[in-house]
Length: 125
Image 1 (cartoon, one colour):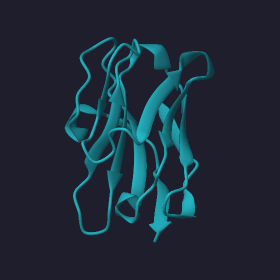
Image 2: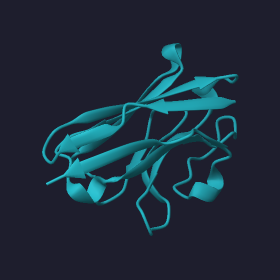
Image 3: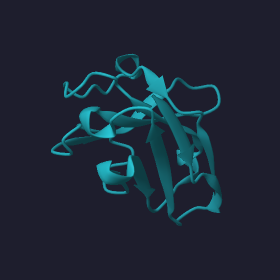
């Protein structure tokens, strides 16, 4: 399974970005997916996850109400819509697949086995 993240960039605070994660070599519809981020000097943290069925999602408290994770299984793509960006959102964002067909979604990075290369989001004030 290969994951390709895209959509990052350098933006001003308050604007929106949409990250995309294209999945190939596997069946997206059976995997739980997640977006994680890692800021300089900090540990990787879960931003949002979505169950394989799309029936449930998780958001970190810091992004609730601003970010939305979604999936389009027909396009084998997972999205992260990021609105009202803040400087503290600056990080490398990674998409990940847990590799467990139709399993329970984890919010820990250790629960994900397939990772994209990361896309940098820089938010300036």
